[in-house]
Image (cartoon, rainbow, N blue to C red; front, side, top):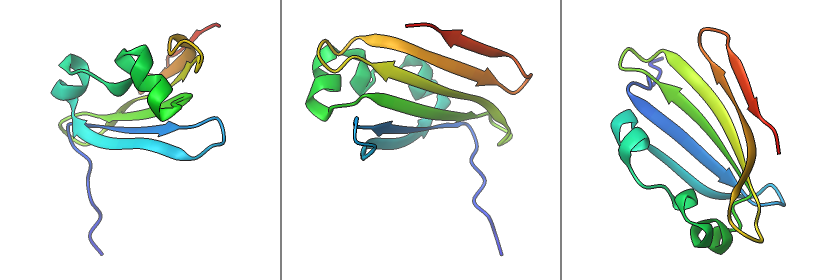
Length: 96
C-alpha cells in the first residue's frame, strides 16, 4: 500500500462552534506564510462562523514541523487565543 506523503504544505481545518467543518484546504507553505487567509478579516470569520482553526505544517521533506490552533470571537471576528506546538518540542500558548 502506498501512503500519500505530505510535503511542503499546510493542512488547515476550520470549525464552527457546533464542531462542524466549515473550512478546509491544503496549500504550499509559501502560500500559507505569505498568502491571505479567510480568518485575516473579521467578516471572513463571521460569514463562516469560523470559531476555531487547526493547522498542520509539513516541510519539503514531508516532516511535521508545527501544529497549531487559533480561536476567534464570532461577534467581532478577531483572534482571541491559540497555541502552537513545534517539532523541536516547544509549545507556546496565547492566552485569551
